[in-house]
Image (cartoon, rainbow, N blue to C red; front, side):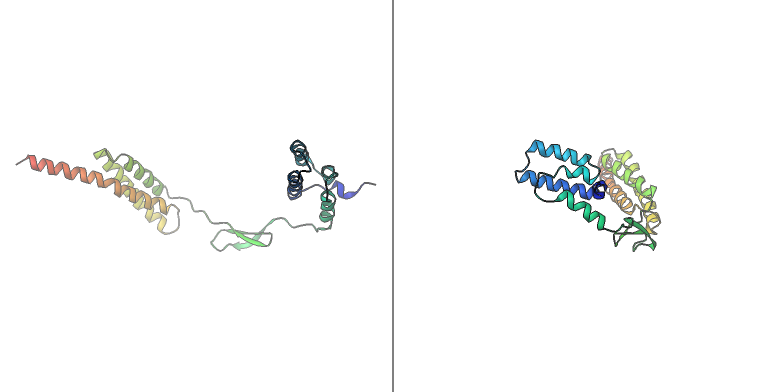
Length: 193
């Protein structure tokens, strides 16, 4: 008669414990590297405890024989995730994971104006040396970022940081343009009596 424990399928945690045991045997000098690699390959191909048992017959300890007994005595476990009524602490759905509550954060859709403001802010910073083009890019960055800030202020849309970043980059990109025009007008007024 066959031992029913030998036909029980091994779990990932059982396989990991067995791999750790093989690694320990190799580090103790009980297994040469080539044999360790061979047994590790067979371990990852094993499906049942019977398949795994042959890997430990010549090693001290009862790794392959202890695991089926422990597995047979454990009651059937509930699924790892069970839905819970209501929502989590910050508004997202909640789930029970092995008696711990895990709250998934609610992800708001991002404001398109905030994203566009940030993109135009980056372009304005890169093109600050183009006086008239930069003025337009920085102006667009500032206007779009302000609209994005209005949209994200009511927590309906995400992207508040993008809007702030676009606004700051737009303002910083305007500074060289303002300086350029100030110098041009100052030079023009100095030339014209």
